[in-house]
Length: 89
Image 1 (cartoon, rainbow, N blue to C red):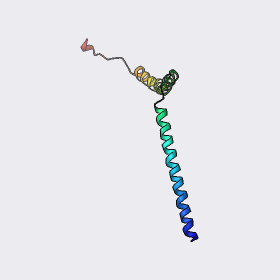
Image 2 (cartoon, rainbow, N blue to C red; image 1 turned 180 degrees about the vertical axis):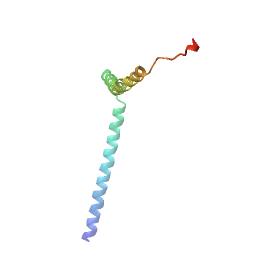
Image 3 (cartoon, rainbow, N blue to C red; image 1 turned 90 degrees about the vertical axis):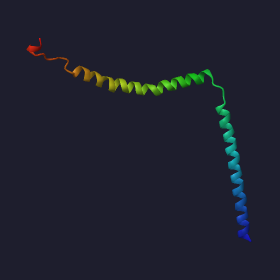
Image 4 (cartoon, rainbow, N blue to C red; image 1 turned 120 degrees about the vertical axis):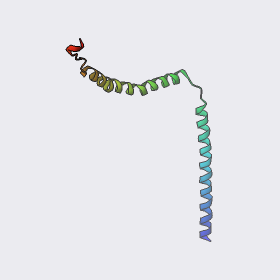
């Protein structure tokens, strides 16, 4: 009899935990939907502009510090002279 009561109480407590988890999931989903529909402000737009600049800046700096000098070195190290034979003059 004690084992049956233990199983019954375990089932009841499990059901309570599951229902609490379902309610909290619904509450969090409702909060997420409310946050998604919040109107955008000027500060939000300014923040997105600043974040986009900061995300592009490392790429630009990498290109300026590694790619551009490589291209310049390649260009300036090429021999830009040409040879002509006497017969082609």
